[in-house]
Image 1 (cartoon, rainbow, N blue to C red):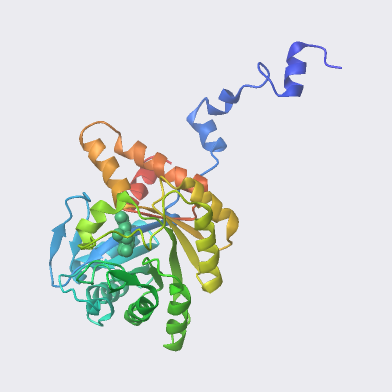
Image 2 (cartoon, rainbow, N blue to C red; image 1 turned 180 degrees about the horizontal axis):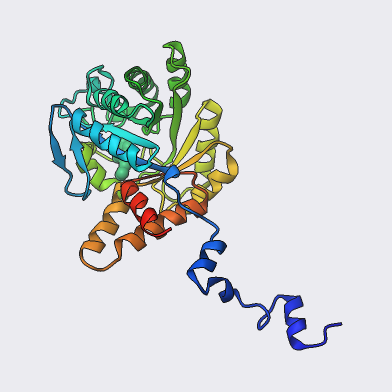
Length: 338
Ligand code: PBG
């Protein structure tokens, strides 16, 4: 039927008729053939809020990031908005810690003040808050501790109060990162009861007990005072369980779910994308960012290339939203070369 070897090869999809390199030959062809495109639309910039005025405390382990008082945080949020970044994720940081995480839900707490300032400076910016207790507890755990254990159901009440206080301050989205069972339902019920039915929930549904949060814990002063978080955060060995967590959270009313960390959990991002219909966010966490920064400082990696490759992999795996400390760099890099 086929006259020449080339015709036969073409029909069977083989070399020499078939040459995948043709579509890679020039930058223009590569642009056409690209399957995944990062866009500023996907990005969320994390910000750390503290009390005071005119205060900026650079975070050693997160080069380029600082703890900021509300006025400076608002300016940074405005700058991100002006650059085309649609959303920020705010973490309040404080030295005032106790066994009831009082500052987590205080109306003048660091998160609440940062939210109000950011919203005032950039009303259209989507303001997301991290809802957790670890940075506000004297023991540094994400929930209420009873007999050296993090008590699930007692923690829900405090988490719900915290989320409501964030909504009152003006947050568009609250993002529980504590990993207690039933927290999404508890937050949804409390938000609705307090008149915040429009406040969305982005659940850190598949959050692993990871070594890659190290720099963040320095930034937020939230390292546990005893033990670790393996009794509530997920075992890095498990992927089916992540799908279960995401499905449960969507059932409880989560509007979006998150996988965290991201670079070492691409299979989980993909599984989540296939299992749920809500947007899936990937959190490129502090340690993942700092590794690239540190290697680049030593001249061992090209920062831009390594970061863009890592973040593109998350989008390729199925992430709709990417939380990254590189957000402002990405916008600049995308502008420099389309
Ligand atoms: C709070 C929280 C953590 C991170 C986000 N929210 C730390 C932790 O769980 O110990 C980590 C973020 C990062 O590493 O960039 N529970």
